[in-house]
Length: 611
Image 1 (tube, one colour):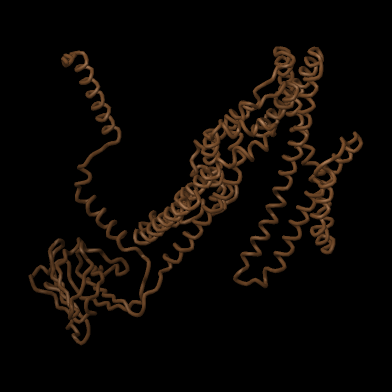
Image 2 (tube, helix red, strand yellow; image 1 turned 90 degrees about the vertical axis):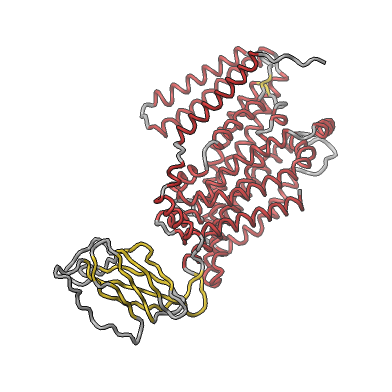
């Protein structure tokens, strides 16, 4: 078989490609200012050597120290007649210094000898100006180590400090005594690294809990089959808006009643104790396990009223439980002593209940009313004529469009304070109604819309937008919102965890086997049953793996967000680096490395065991 002849054009193309790559990298060198001459600079080498030596000696343990400080006179500038200045007689019964010669010009060398100091000990030797003893001058390699007899010898270059008065060479030799003890820096590092680990744990827990439901909305294979007629979509939007507003109003009244009942402790305790039984009875009556015949209209209405009453009672019980928990935590706090954090935890849980209950109530009431009205809209479209469906579509869609753009106008007014209702209220209402009516007029009367894909697209867009924002920036924002500290770090990492895990989880949902989905759908199961029996069993192992991996990531990220006020060890590390305290910073670096390595080992063991 003949070998193909080499092509001149192909060879030229290859050469041009190589040349282009070289040009790109050459320009990259120019942009990034790569210059090894700086690395060979003597000043740079001295600086990096000093820093590396400091980092190699982490400030973890310390000792009690005793020291010996001795001075010897020296003259910078000799007398004009050439005679040597007279110096006091040296007392040799203890440690002492000898400086030869006793006078020299600036920049000349003198020999300094020390005798009788602590053996095999270290310390600095400094030049002390006679007129400024509080500011000694560093003289090159001024740290010395004594020999086994406590002696040392070195040469020092005198600084440019000429004076007719005597100045001094001062040696300070120190040695360790007693047992080693942890430094204050080591104790601070321990406190902050523990804070860092729990910061990451709470952020991972919160983020995982919220990312799981969001991931189903961001899974295309689950959402693409969700379709609804236009009237169902419009009425569902109106139901969500009205339901959330109604939920906020109702929960406000319930909160007032809860405070009134909480004023009497006995009533508060009785309400919390009896609420579960009452709720169970109402739910059991309103949703019986089986029925021999279809319920009447009056019975269905009574059951709906019972469910609403049960929901209101449930929210009242949550608020009552929050009040009772807060009261109990304050009562037991003095008795717990060093375990007072348990009482503080109970108080914070009660505060979370108080804050989150109105939000949950709004979402629940919005979801219930939106689902009910959406079902009514779908039923009306399916059973009515084309003309009736067209009229219903135009009216409901115009109302929904007005509601959505009206809310948007209200948000714009709240942010920018324009102060012109015509622009931020009436115009959005009118435009929204017109757009809604136009959409309804353009679409077929009984056409269905890909609601699931719209929700999927919106969810994915929000997740991608938030994921593009670094956790550092989130920490800055939350530090402004709640103050500098680990709480801001938990919120920043929690939000970043939500958007990151929701993407990973949703991609895992999209890659599940379609067979179980089709089998469960064939039985007539609804969407919730499909997810429970066909989706969840396939995603539990990868969800566990992703969650543990995210905890590992959060531990590493929490060491960084502390640098911008997010709590944890990062703030301490940045502070020591800014103050050039490299030995202290080395302690924090070691702690971070140990924790990250331990987390990596722990997560690998857990993945091997459970995944």
